[in-house]
Amino acid sequence: MDAKVERREFLRGAIAAGLVIGFPWPRARGDEQMRPLVSPLAQARAEMERRGAPGVLIVVPAHRREQLTADLNRVFGGSIDDPERGKRVPPQAEPDRDLLRLFARAVFVCEADTEVGRALGPAAAGAAVVRLDPDGSVAELVARDSALVNEGWEAAFVSTVVALLDGPEDRRLEAAAAHQRAAFPALAGQADAAFAQLDAAEFVAREDASAALLGVCDRWGNVLVLAARRTTSLEVRTRIEQVLAAYVARLATPADNALPDPEAKEPAARLVLPLGVRWSFRQIDPCPGCGMGSAPHPVRRYLALVAGAGR
Image 1 (tube, rainbow, N blue to C red):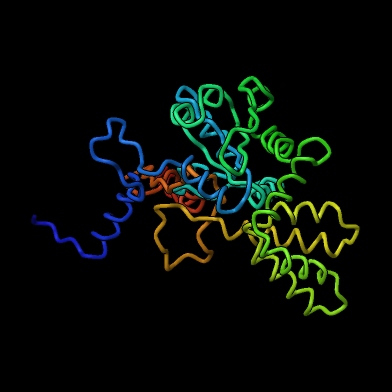
Image 2 (image 1 turned 135 degrees about the vertical axis):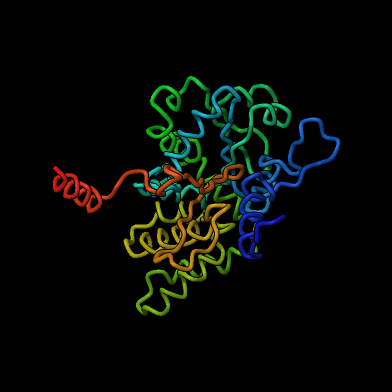
């Protein structure tokens, strides 16, 4: 090897390549389909049991993988291509706040229809979205000919999932909140005491109450959402919404192959994504000669000046 390669550049290339090809996913030797040792659906079911929360399973059929990927990028605020800048950049619009709040209520996961069929049966594999009970069993199916497909994922996803989780007259939300209370009785006293202080006269008491609820939000999300809907206090409702937003922000992850940029003026973009979904920066060299996809305006003016002077 004649070319000199610095250790920093070698490690940068090795790390980026490993993450892009799926290094975090260990593979099983001898497995004909080379599936991950732990599938996204299995991870989701374990997380649902840990949180006592329902699940929202997005089924990914093989023939619609590319289109569905594009749809979900728009729904969850996925990155967009910007060839002129030579990399993927954050979305132009923020993800729907109602959608992000749902991550405090349920575990979201995307899984291939073949894996869904093996785990949950052919009916679930043929659906567009499956609502799962906290024990991982199938509770309800959304057919592929539903509004999600007819009206488009971007337009119908949030309303469809809200209806799935709420149920008529909030009965499913009430059941989910009751399940979390029954599953984690030790949290009830602490959470109820904090809830009672959300509209206390002292600001410090209200702040302490918000911090205490943030600490239990992981396993108390449906209880908090139901409390926010039932309260008549604007202060209480606002503080619960702030707690839910702060909890969801903790779930956000950066691009899986993003490397620290010491010259960056802003922190790396982070997205809240379902299990089984990742996002990566894709480096693009639009013009190997000069590194520019198009000449900037000052360069074009200079060229016009030079071309005009030579006439």
